[in-house]
Length: 108
Image 1 (spheres, rainbow, N blue to C red):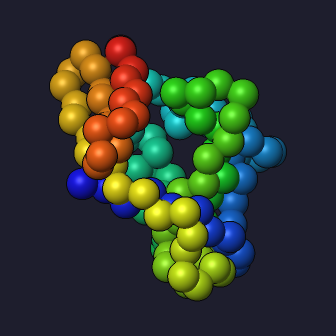
Image 2 (image 1 turned 90 degrees about the vertical axis):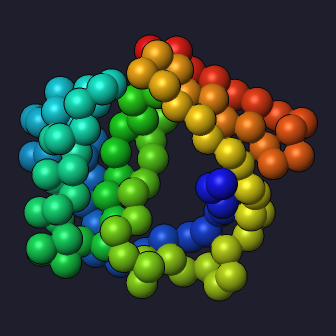
């Protein structure tokens, strides 16, 4: 079970969609190899980065945020909390709302 929620974020950040970071775009937009994104996050933590803005791989043209430190969360408590179940295989990811009313899936 995963709990999704909305919140505001603040703090030291890096934006992978802006220079100079965008030069490594191929690394963090790879659909199956996460080693590049994991390396960036590990290095960011060493330098005190609290959150990273990046381009969504699954929904091109949109952006996401990876929060590396709970100190970056600015809304207490978070709002619009929802519980979802996630199942994944090599070929597909399926997320279902805990009440079973909504399901989304992605094929690779």
